[in-house]
Amino acid sequence: MASLRLASVAWQIGSPGGVAGWAARLRATVEAAGAQMVVCPEYAPLEAFATPPGAGAADLAGELARAIDGADTVIRAAASVARGAGVWLLAGSLPMRTGDTVRNRAILAAPSGEVVLADKHVMTRFEDEQWHISGGAPPGVVETPWGRIGIAICFDGEFPNLVRAQVEAGAFLILMPSCTDTAAGFERVRIAARARAMENQCFVALAPTVGTAPWSAALDVNRGQALICGPMDHGFPADGILAASSMDVPGIASATIDPAALEAVRAQGQVQNHRRWPAGAAAPLLVPHA
Image 1 (cartoon, rainbow, N blue to C red):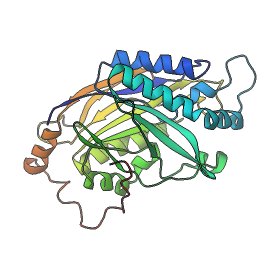
Image 2: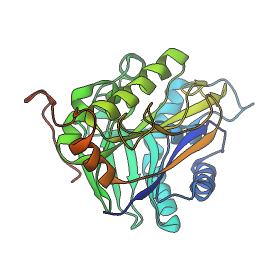
Image 3: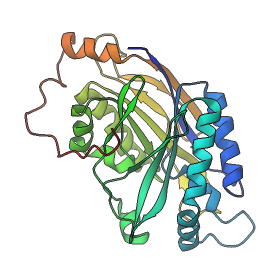
Image 4: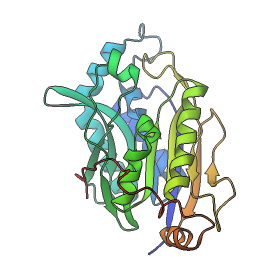
């Protein structure tokens, strides 16, 4: 099985003035990453729907409504960027209407232009109480040339059983797009990413939003650091961190990861977390993307 050049993006929230401007930023970021798979943060495309600086007060309800109405345009733009660059691209996530509910859905585009939409399962208080977004299906897995991958959007990554179910379904890599507005919020996500990599002996790519954007009601403050993590065992760094950007500034964390290295460490490592997970401890898994 071939190795994968992976890039995780700490995305500076900007004011691109619409979907076309956001897509141009996305295209430039993918080109700069120089990777086969690029991971962008939760809610990064929402910047396309914020009130432009100087055009009036930020409007939370207006941003949400515009994002829902523009979701299809964002999906098509993400697919175009992935196809043009020949990469696997997690372009972020966006609130999307499905029937009578609104869900936070990640957009994963393949080089073919095919798109998988993956739901966030567990809502934060902000999503639940202010945006009234509903939780979606438990995370599934996606087939790629390197093997199966899973997506755990931000808060989902803090629930071990959700990620464990993806790993038991064959995922060697978990993509964790995030959006947090406090240092404590990001620490929870960062610790979760490293813990999931440790306990499952898998790779985790964490991509956060960063920077301040007072023109956006939802993305006004953003804290984070891009990370790519692996097991804390033979053949890996002692802290499990394969690559990291600087805290709270835009940047790209890049690493070449090898699925075969996981098989080796699971079989011959100092510990065997993956093998010794208690039987029956994983949550039920729906696999809508395989």
